[in-house]
Image (cartoon, rainbow, N blue to C red):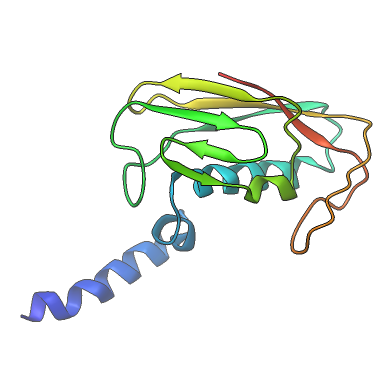
Length: 140
C-alpha cells in the first residue's frame, strides 16, 4: 500500500530531474512529439546563418507511441503511425507530400531549408519571428 502511495511522487521527481521535458513525455502522442522536435529546431535555427539543417527523430514506444515498424507522412499534418497533428504548421511549410516507412527504433531524418518566401502563418500562438519561410524538403 505504501508503494502505491509513493509511486506517483517518485515518478514526478524522476521525470522532473531528467533532461526530457515531462510535458512532452507524458501528455503527448508520437505525432505531437515529432511536431515539438520540428518546433524546437525551427526556432533555434531561424536566426542562424545556415541555409539548411537536419532533424533526427526516433519515436518513443510509450506513452501513445510506436511499438514496432512505423511510417511518417508530412504535409498539412504530421502523421506518425496512427497519430496526427497540424502543430508543425506554426513553424514550417511542407511544399509537397512527404512519406517514409521505418523499422522499429529506426530514426527518421527531416531536412529543413530556409527560403526567400515570406512567412505568413496567421494563426495565434508561438511561431517564427522572421520574414523567411522554413520548409521541410525531404524525409528519409
